[in-house]
Amino acid sequence: MNPTMQTLDLLKAALGSPSAELAKTISTATGLVPFDLQAPAKNLYPVNTPIRNRLPRVGGGQGTATNWKQITSIAGSGYDAMAWVPEGQRTARMSYSAVNKSASYVTLGEEDNVTFEAISAGQGFEDVRSTGTMRVLQKMMLKEENALIFGNNSLALGTPGTPTLSAGGSGGTLGAATYSVMVVALTGEGFRNSSLSGGVATSQTVTGADGATYTLKGGSSNKSAAATQAITLGQVLSCSVAAVTGAVGYAWYVGTAGNEKLERITTINSATFNAPLVGGTRQAATVITADNSQNTLAFDGLMTHAFSGTGAYVRTLATGTAGTGTVLTSSGRGTINEIDDMLQAMWDTNQVSPDVIYVSSQELKNITNKALAGPGTSPLLQVFTPPEQGYPGLMAGGVIGFYFNPFAMNGGIRIPIMLHPSLPAGTILAWADNLPAQYQSNNVPRCAEVKVRRDYYQLDFPIRTRAQEFGVYAEEVLAVYAPFAIGVITNIANG
Image (cartoon, one colour):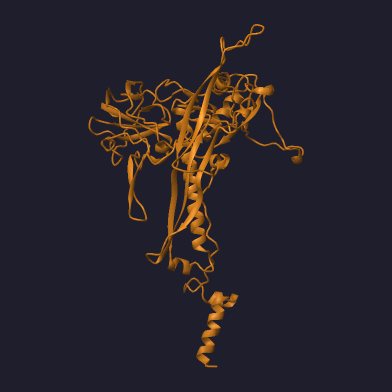
């Protein structure tokens, strides 16, 4: 063999699996060291879609919408609560109310691409084509989760009322001036799309991979009229606005007249300012020129159905003191008054109970604190330890994992309290997966379902450049048959 070629072969073999002695020779001083790359790539992002996973998916959809008839009430003859009939006679005919309902199918989708160089370079590391499709699917599922909760086709936030301002207190460092304040209301989508650094989401023109464009509305209302308040050094500027139906957040623009900038986003309908404003490059109120709360491409999510006056239980807590708001309150017997009121109202009105209560981390903490802190509640609380764990050790902390609802048939039910990653602080969402036994004969076993015209499907697009383009789509609609089985409590202050 050629000595030079033999030397090169030995060198390649040594670099491919270097000995300890050689590793010392080619140390970091020369940079000739092995590269230890673990395969495949670590996907460090959460994919948590509990409501999407919980809702049934039903195929067989056809046409542009799914349609059904809904019998909303039946009324007996005579007095509705009396069935008395004389001997030998017939009673009068009963009556009922029926309405036609429909929900239009919409398309959800997400796309990506990988270059042929990336496919080649990934050999032996990971199949970038397959993992790329997996990530597109995961992102699609995350977007669908938000759509099922917050999707808004029909409910316009409009323009909030003019804020109410006041000055008072002492010890603040807000400079002396006459301040102008405007407020923008946010849907669940708008709250998730907005931030102090990025500004309130208005609308966005999306250029698809096919070059065609479409417009998405960000989930924000128009801005309110401006209110002004003179502040002397040391005072606190307090602001509040009438709660807007459908809003779970509020964006506050503050500054001198004509210079209002985004200063705060809250999950209650008030805010206070006692320190110098940030101003600077924050979004100016002049950017907000229209109501961008609805999307014609969307279907209505669970919360939109609730807010739309369809018979769901909705409670917006009182404004209270500006910046402080109204908190959940303990009943003193291990429960929360506001949740008790919701459960009782849902039974009294429609004889239903939620099967699950979803909360944010803030509300989970507050519910636990209020339930445990009430006087004399200890005998009313239960601790559950799986038998297989044996004798439990001591553990700091605890959480209210279930809520007992006495307002249900057969002695009441235990409702799990579930943490949801997308639900804003200040909002509680409850609903029933299935209607109770007294409804089961009425052809509505489910309160809501995802009606699918075409469930998840993958598209591999024709090659038009040196990259493989692919997408995941679904054609579906959230069909809510019993909106009265949804409960929402919102405008909850922290504390």
